[in-house]
Image (cartoon, rainbow, N blue to C red):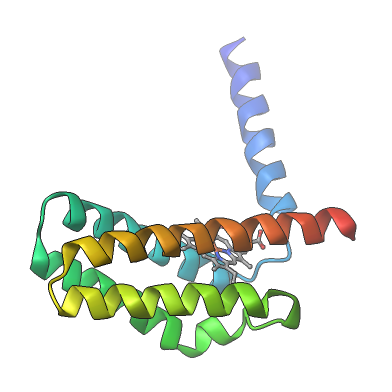
Length: 128
Ligand code: HEC
């Protein structure tokens, strides 16, 4: 029984891996990095840790300036990319001014941009 469950779990995992196709391994890794930095920004905001806020916001901005991000500049997603880039830029600027309140607002804008782009992606897939 345990063995059967185990086989089933492995099968389900494989299935998830295959159906996630369409994403390049580079995009996946970049998104994981973004998620980690975004989580750290939340930690910095909630503990008023200015230096962590600055380093994590700067790391996010660096990712958006790297060529890896260009792989996402498909016309269909351009508007979503722009909204995200703007929020990250403003977040970083607020962090540099050590303005926690403004940074919290931009953190919210950035998170909204993450979710909107992902929702759009999902809709595009369904439409195909
Ligand atoms: C402009 C569009 C866009 C924005 C903005 C965006 N993403 Fe993504 N994200 C993608 C695409 C494209 C993929 C690949 C998804 C796929 O092919 O299923 C992805 C995948 C991911 C994944 C899955 C990676 C994996 O391991 O498979 C995570 C986690 C993720 N994004 C987190 C984030 C976070 C956190 C943010 C905001 C800080 C964000 N994304 C903003 C487009 C975007």
